[in-house]
Length: 355
Image (cartoon, rainbow, N blue to C red):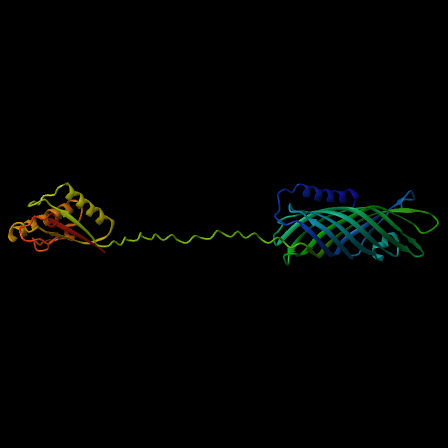
């Protein structure tokens, strides 16, 4: 694979990452992860420096890689991470037949800074993409009989990543991913007196499976408690006033049954009192003094009771609640002998009872 094609792959992933917009809903916090990778495709291109042009390519065996990461997840969906990794690839005889070499292997230790973007942050399934750059320490060895090529060298490496995290618990995710890793320009020397050197361009593709642990537990959801429902307002009817039995006395002039001003004021007071309470009944009793004959006085007392009754009805007292009586000169307020004109006896008594 050419160096330009490898660079294009990583640039394409970076452009996709830069074009992501929107805000993910997640809590910020530190996390750690560990994963194991299985390389399904990889190669190293070897180019001789200043020699006869002894260039060759080697396809790698499908071997394993390991990665440890510590990072910080931001609430907007981005993650920034530091990662340590190790890759091991073995060259077998079939890989080296084209250049008539025996065997070999390569170790690559890396320290990378990665930038990720998580889609659907806070969801059970979170796809992600990412890019990374850092230093790579190679230990490359190729053997051909008594001749050994290889030594350690440190170069710049880069990678593109994509995958999906599946929530296992609130803090633990299963991480399944794809990783493209490359590093160019590692130099090693032929182990003989010729001093010939080679540059190696390395690339590897792998599938990774691991675990990611969020150190801080997600914030508990805010439970908004609705205000308590006020108890229903019970409209209590106003208490009915309880009133004692009330008595009013309407006085008349001698031998008269018409109502003067004082009599009308007394009747108005009786009506006002009746309106304050629930009336049970009204008793109206007419009286006279002892002047005049008993028969005449009986009729006069009836007329006095009747005129008071009519005045009460005219002012709103129900006629059915009024009982009219006449007692003539038999029930004196002030006892006198026969034939005496006594003002206190010329009266109509009004008695109002309440429920």
